[in-house]
Length: 151
Length: 125
Image (cartoon, rainbow over all chains, first blue to last red; front, side, top):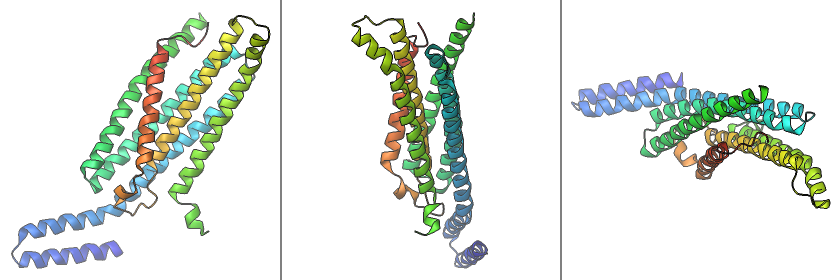
């Protein structure tokens, strides 16, 4: 209800400025009113995405710890390989959470399109790309090692 | 303390990151304990490092890598959930630069270590 009044009051401002013959000011006010209208929705969505990323990491960490406890009874040689499997599983969860964070950061640039925010987004995306590449190499090597030990 | 102060995003992140830190300490502690006895025996008997102690060391290294992975997950959490008030448009002022630097540093170390270790076979003799 409050947002409705904000939008209608902004619209009345637009009408006023249009009547006074300054269309440039009208466009600015439209932009500002749209931003103030969108801001709570975008903030809520980014908050939800951040919570989802946190849940993914939390669940991955719990499953990782449970798997670690399960392998403690096995021989040490087998534990090494199992730990690598757990680590890579956790890394995949991290990568998914990082994807969520990238999405959240993109939405944040909608609200605050500043150079600082864009640079943070660029760094996060860059790290995600390098992490993904590194993880794919590690998974390939791990699969080769498992195949070699099974043969 | 009001309940709304307890259950905001920052307190949730704080609790989750502390729990993950406990996991990390537990993993490192258990792994250190596992290799302690074989290495101690190696030292006491003045033996050259045998196959068993090598396997134990490799197991410890894999535990450390698992702990580093958990800390990387912590860094992602701290990076993403530093905004406590979702109605605060001026969140740039709330960015904790330390969290961002920690995020970049930990993930860079993780990538560098794994790429270096990939060149060496640590998964077995």
